[in-house]
Length: 86
Image (cartoon, rainbow, N blue to C red; front, side, top):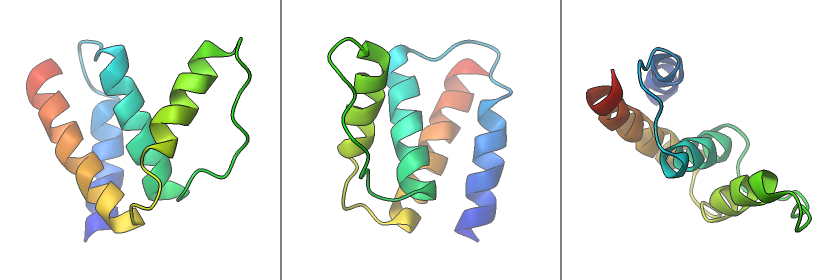
């Protein structure tokens, strides 16, 4: 089941021994939020909130993607990170 694999992948991320790049973190965040919350309907952060704005934009790029598709993409992405950083 995809949900169980998704939860397992979310746990695997916590065990990485090296830090992924900022872009990889943003992709992880965006896919996780899309999979668990759905489309981004929050207000865009202000100009001075650079981190919040980057996260918002990354998540917003996933708009329209189903939860199942986002979960599967997250699982695949985490597997790549584990191979690269574990």
